[in-house]
Image (cartoon, rainbow, N blue to C red; front, side, top):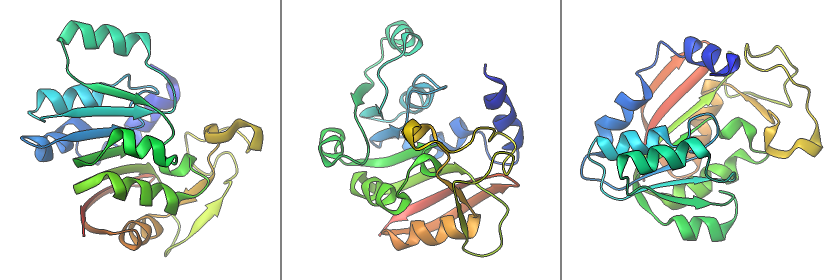
Length: 204
């Protein structure tokens, strides 16, 4: 496991385990994991399937990993994978609408986070579970292209040529909640540590 992933997990220990949070919401419901591949290899999609979700889809801009393929075969899984960019309407159409949408580690890598949230809203019939790294800023503030070191796992300088690899935004928990509610959701739960926030929001 990458050192940055281990550190991110340690910093997020104050939140419910992601598999537990997903399991609370998915039984008998359809489920999609947006950003399902990088560093997790479909693990949350598989966890949702095991927890009783009906139709399960994973979507990512990167293709299927070998680890994902092997685990899919081992489980005899019915998880469907769609490769595409969340911001592309064709990808949203291919994924379709699901009762529960899980999206983790995506928002701060997106140049236009309100557009990202609008695309997530288009996929969400009932519940969005959104997890993201955040900065301990006061109020509804964001920093564009935050400098390395502003977050414990952020070490690389902004480079426009690197696209979604960049941390485009350092988002405060307040700004996160405000953006979620501005794009057609109502926040029902918030789980926060110093550098990470997860919200559970209802589509309205």
